[in-house]
Amino acid sequence: MKPFNLAEFKAGQPALTRDGRIATFAYDDKNSNVIAAHIDGELFGFCQNGKFLVFHRFTHDLVAMTDSTSGPATVSHIGEKAT
Image (tube, rainbow, N blue to C red; front, top):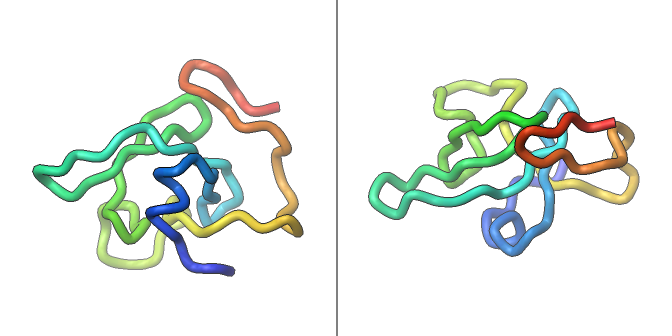
């Protein structure tokens, strides 16, 4: 998997969780270096390196999307479920 790229994510490029769910950028907290992402209609917090605010590999960690990625084809927005 390609590593998570914060600049691309903040510019609108979706990312994936390690378990294959699509994540879209919501906002960043410049005071705490935490970013927020929408995943399956919920809001989650991440470190700026894409780690799911835990100190080991986790299925919510973000990775870059590629054209060869299989999984949901639609991006969910808060309050909506991916189809």
